[in-house]
Image 1 (cartoon, rainbow, N blue to C red):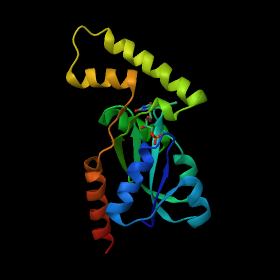
Image 2 (cartoon, rainbow, N blue to C red):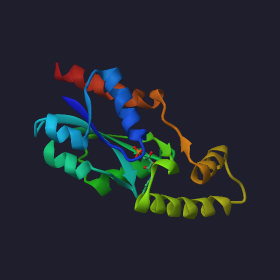
Image 3 (tube, rainbow, N blue to C red):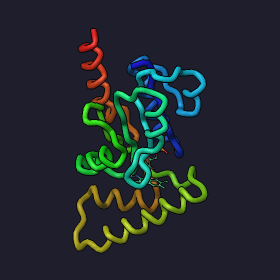
Image 4 (cartoon, rainbow, N blue to C red):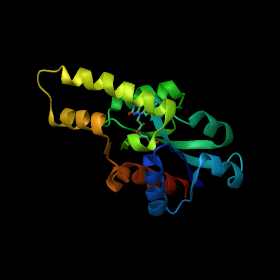
Length: 173
Ligand SMILES: Cc1cc2nc3c(=O)[nH]c(=O)nc-3n(C[C@H](O)[C@H](O)[C@H](O)COP(=O)(O)O)c2cc1C
């Protein structure tokens, strides 16, 4: 793979992309930037923020580049079933590595329709959680995040992707 290409609205995915760039030595470009510096057809690792169960920008990225691996960065805690569904929703082939990274919610960095949509989704999900007679610690944390925002970007969340990249590189040698 030649580069990491990302799409980010509130900065979580961009921060993950920069951390992954540092640990792997691959350059990281936003999708808009990449179009002018990275030739069409290059092999990339794509990172996009999750929007209503889909990975933003992935279809545009796949039109220009050979996407070999994908990371979806969303607000919710990792859920393998939701990630599998994202693969289907976004037409990510089975031989392309797909990973989920928990980003967070930063209402201050969102505007217009995106902010409105996320507030609406958070309200719906929050009401569902509040209606539960008992909540786990993780559910309490999610409820707080939905109301106030929260940041879950951690370097250790990239361990699985870094391991996958290393193994892939070793196979190519
Ligand atoms: C319109 C909208 C829809 C979203 N839908 C989802 C979703 O379906 N699942 C999820 O986990 N997060 C969802 N989120 C939350 C973002 O994916 C999350 O805040 C992520 O960290 C944003 O990454 P960014 O900071 O790089 O933009 C949504 C956010 C917005 C604004």
